Length: 455
Image (cartoon, rainbow, N blue to C red; front, side, top):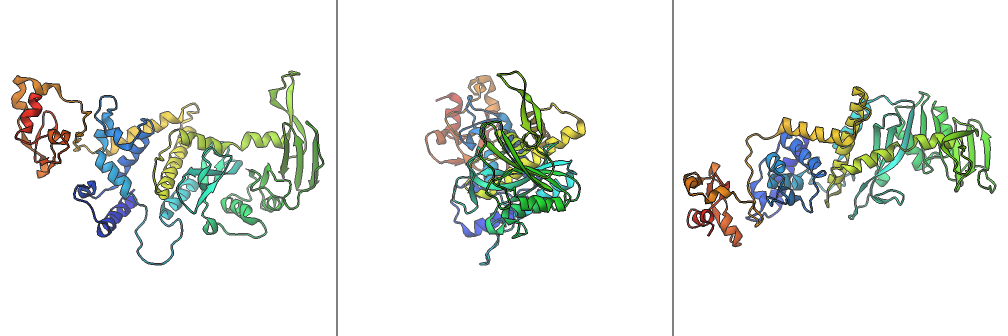
């Protein structure tokens, strides 16, 4: 977090040197951030997912229908919006040299990948699948995956442990600059698999992949490296046998050790390839409604169905409480998605260490927010009231016996703020005085009297 705070401060310095800032811009009130501010920024961002509003500013609204005091007590609205706009993850480069597409996030990506690998030794079964970070803006990295819930966005290749659900590693797709070693004999998909599996070969693990990755050439390569593989496959892949047309329930298999290729027809034709299974038919947990007997499936199909959904489950959990919010900056969305992945892995690790198998992710998510606020909350922060018409006024201001409590006092640090009464008239008058009892900024004459006498 110290590195992110440093890069954010450096970016602000670059911004003020190159942008003409308006007189009343909130950027005028910028003060350098530290790791404490970044942690509180993340806590507020995570808390926003549990308190839906139409706009970011509504979280700080003092309207009785929208008021949530917790946001006022953590960070001010202006501070949060300033950090959001200036948030940066690397130093600003001003040279004319062409930089890699992911240079703005390279530090965050490398840090996350290293931490994920260090945190766990995978179990026997692992899987690889795509995940997508939603983004619909103009971006050369944007991909279209029609079978995903969010069809447009930045594509990630994710390696996941089947037993725990832990995300072990990931690669961000960036076209020709994708961080993989290309192997012409395996193609792009095979090269992605070998890059993710580099540290987990020769250990008798079983890898599950879908038809974008599967090929006889790749599975033979993995078998030579001491790794079993199973997955659906496209029937026109190089090296695949030609299957005949089958009726529902029929099966056809071909063997070319160590490979087994199989076609089975259920509601539609399924083509599988495996180096671990045979063509055995086994009963499943589901019952046939007509006969009441267990449904029968090929062993490889049943095993693939049970072990291939870990990444989709991770995407589902993240989507319910994601940090990602509307932004035109793709790298901010991707960075917040990586934060979500950190949080999900922490949840899985917590369940494994504590043995809390039934603890929901929502409870863990809330407890993380609570502990972040408790550890990093700015104790000296005083919330600044809004100047909107929906303000919940202090009723005690009308009581004559409390008149002395409403005596005007100077604003601390000799700052100036907009007068509440003038703001309601859409005048931009600023004052150096306030009523501490009402926590409202007011001109001494005549606004203070008007406000307290309700004129």
